[in-house]
Image 1: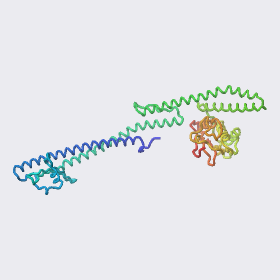
Image 2 (image 1 turned 90 degrees about the vertical axis):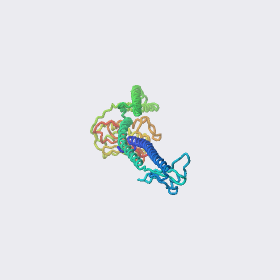
Image 3 (image 1 turned 45 degrees about the vertical axis):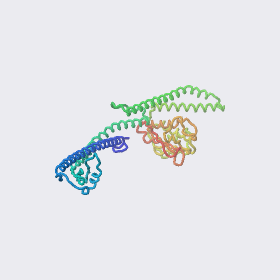
Image 4 (image 1 turned 90 degrees about the horizontal axis):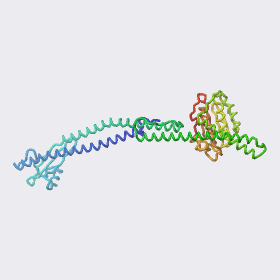
Length: 434
């Protein structure tokens, strides 16, 4: 799912914020250096000007003994206090005392003073307002230029980050497709970029290919084992049928051979579902009668309610298989009473045992795993086959814990007549731990 355009947590805005901070820091450092350099140059120029004025006034005073026109001649007590302190603090080789008189926003004077004839001080001052206003104008110009640069840089940074965003979103969508069962999905390589995203995409594609190969090998192994076992199993079934009927040991052999035969048939069915070789044959059937017919061979139901059943267009053989597996699972892993109800196009199977295991509710049924010791023994293929057949039908199969305790499986056939969708067809409840 794509992030909202103005989501501050998205990569595009984090990159833009980083660029803004970098630009602001750079502009602040450069601006500070330029400001300081310009201010020093202005102060140095002003000092040179006032020193030249004071030196000229000092020469004129030495020649005439009178106050020069361009300077003031005062006693130390008549000077401004800061300038008087600067004069009092003069030590060789310092010749002149300086005082910068600033009264913002319009008064910027640089004073210079030199003692003459032992008890009087010759002072001059120069106006630095032009230098100060020039510095202020430079500061405003730098701020304006920085803001203008940000108006160009930030959209550029967002657009540059958006390209990476698109690649990352494509990768995340592909990863979700792989997690959802589409093992043919690949991120692929787009453009000429050779960066960390390209490396990650290549790694994910390699992982998906390895996962697909391993799953295909496991499916082939399951199918090959089931097919190889089928021939000797038929021989065992035939041989077991020749054993005496009244022999206890012979009865035990026949029971175990029957169990083995059921397991092999389940494995073959799983292999066909994995291979996608199953095809539905739709027909109009009364769902209530179909469910009642499927419940009996699976162990029956303590309560069976079909009064509200509808006529549905579906594959009756697959619906029978799903219902029979759900009922058999309820008997094997749950506890009485086992209740089966048909309402419209929906079939529910509930037992009163410990409920479904938490792992099954979180991840769905897994072959050769029953999920919890308290749910009894089994090879875990019954619910796996039910899920696979529901996917072939395009039906929705939901596993949950019933509100009053026990496991609740719901098969919804409302959309099975619309096509043969082979999606997951499964959902799991989240209430209870199973």
